Image 1 (tube, helix red, strand yellow):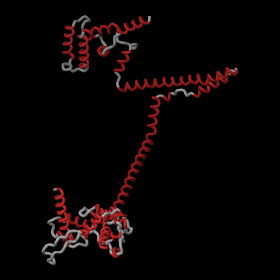
Image 2 (cartoon, one colour):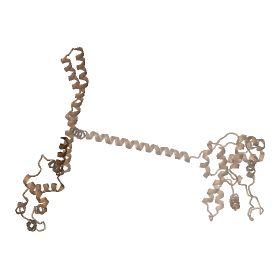
Image 3 (spheres, one colour):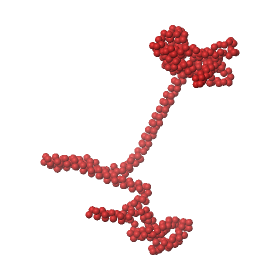
Image 4 (cartoon, one colour):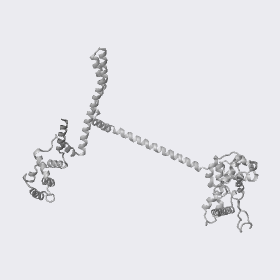
Length: 449
């Protein structure tokens, strides 16, 4: 029996026809014209296609917008075109005859509502959805209430009933009172909880309190701006204080090294170049303790690590030993004069004979003869490279860049920029540097060959 029912259902399903887009368009034209198509064109129901075309040519000459400028002629012509398009097509004409016999779909068919919704505007659709959501929310709220009530009756109240049956003390008044108290504890759905009511109350609250809300928003915005301005001003003040501290020169405390008694009578040079003050200001944190044997061994190793010809050699050695460049140069000179390294056990300190070669290089600066037109007419050796301090070297480099070749009285100006050095000293120093650079290039070239 079941198989027969299923078979009949499939047969019925196959006989069902769905509405097409052409059907919906035909329904729209019928509602728009709201008149019998044949009487609208002035024709009979059994007219053929040729008669329909002939009537169309006649009416188009009468109602075409280019021929007729009267009001409503354009709408009339649009309806004529739609009716003629339906009647010329045999399939659409048959469907129209079916509509004439059975009428348009009414409210009992789904297509009726679909056509209404399809023609809705945006505002109408929003109102429809709002009503639909409100009804759905109301139904769901009541369903949840009845579900909670049913669970309460099945759990709590059933427990009281079972206890009363066991004790055989059925008290209907007490049971009803307990049941009423539990049911009252359940909150029934209220109309104020609906979406529409909540939306209306919210809009009313915003309109009523808009002045206070606006003032509060403006106050918070102003507070935020003030906070940002205060933070910016504090950062600017901190930056200004930091820049002033950077621009303010720091006086470096100099300590005479006490490597030997002979070095105690010497004092470090007191003249420094103004351009190197900022770079030497950071030396105030260097060590100010006397030189020990470990420091001397570290100095010898540093001289081995940075041999003669290294750029800013003494500054690198000083940074490695956490000393000043002038202090390192002074101690190195005193070590050469007093031969203090003889008191150090080389192998105990990890120093080999090769490390002492760097000490010997300290006094092996090449000499360059003065030009023939010098003051005494003889040959005088150039000053050694180590007679120039790091500050004087930096001053001379800056002066060479400031006064390029071709500048009038170039060497006089360079000598004025280098403290403690004369014009001849600067020239000899320049020649020494050129000669050392040339010799270094020759050595590198010979090594590569």
